[in-house]
Length: 288
Image (cartoon, rainbow, N blue to C red; front, top):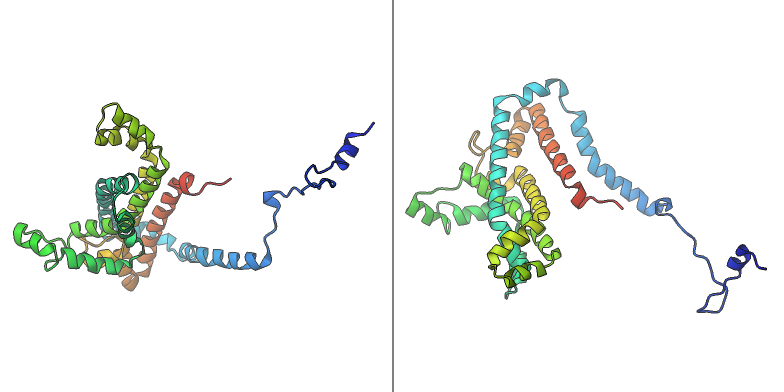
């Protein structure tokens, strides 16, 4: 009678006819990182984390309450929150339909349209501000008609801040919503249309609830991007306290005159960024 141990030892591979080799079981957590990969990985980690740690170390914690309660800081913070929220609303109104168009409708040049939509992601923000001036400035392609016909001037106004922030933030929402739409099953939408619902009703009553998490994630990313926008804002809207001076612009100005105030404002933006990452951790930072 053969023992179970000897039976396992004498197992034969049915394919090759030879003795079956047992594959070593290696735990995922037990894998040792090779030194040529470990060293640059640690250097990269230090490179990314060290500036943030230095910001916390050099922060004027003793005078932080006075710095954060000054009228200038609250003015810039309030303007940043209002403009970022308005830019996010603009992105939702125009970005969600645009994402649906890219994900659901086949039309010639869709790849080109998608590339143009995502272009602000890689375009330098200052270039985006110059482009907005050429389009919506007083002598711009569209801006001159807005000025002559309606008396509307957009540059160097609070509305200009919202437009600049929406220009750089909307692609984040479009990409997020388009990816969610592509992952959603279109048969639910098709079933609603076969039951008599219009395409818009099917989108509003069926598709939109399905993609709500993706819309929320895209809106949060767009809001955070709008809150931290600097280049396009200062180029298109200027830096006027109480009217166009947002938090990033206030940090830039304070760094020249009051470095402690600049650090305090930077910590506020850092806290907002951490809050955004914490809110999106279940969607973007899953662990197995």
